[in-house]
Length: 290
Image 1 (cartoon, one colour):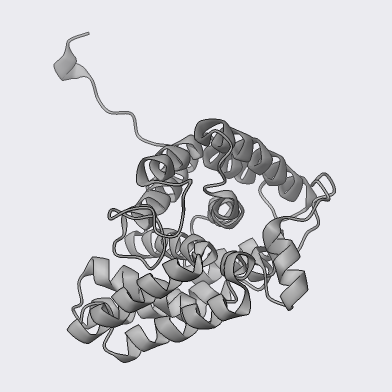
Image 2 (image 1 turned 90 degrees about the vertical axis):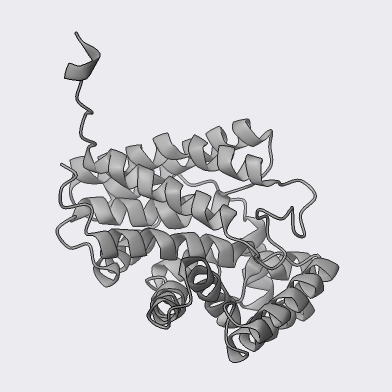
């Protein structure tokens, strides 16, 4: 066949959702300057992570996100069959991630959050508003996966110790850090003309102001969490990342969190969830993905 006669195959809904999830992870990783997180400047507070590894990890998760969406389309409703299917696929995706990163945990929390959102979006693409998608995701998260391993993750241990809301509870409540802080701030900063990268930074900071980030608690305890929340609020109060004063405060926050070895990985995962929901909602992109 002549090359000029070749036509690009249209993507399925599951493929498109997997693309959006991976794009959200890569966009989060690339966003700079993020306080104490891996970005285009360097490794932040991490000794075992770098930007190339974050990209490779995100790409390795594409098959898992696609399979989760396909399971949701095939099963067609919230219930134990779908919950256990996405749990199994998520664990397989985690193993693929760890094989790619040689055992480094790059995106374990993101597999949970974005996997739920991809599955929820695939269930009803005609109802792709962020509120509708997070409500379906919450209903899925509330179901107990009987096949899930019982050992507690670091995040779950820390959540129990400090009485903090972990990733599981965040999802079960419909992602309040995204719906009440991340997405609203993203939209406010865009309306204010701050530019897309600054709007995304502001969304991350808005999430950080209230989140009991279990990654920070695990690495730096309550002093680290207080520094993160207070510092993020001070950046926004100074005008956000698009202002000179806000940039100065952001630099100070970055240096403070690195000194404390406190990296807000939970907030980063929720920023990726924010970016995924924003793309689904803003572009209405799922309507033509069949």
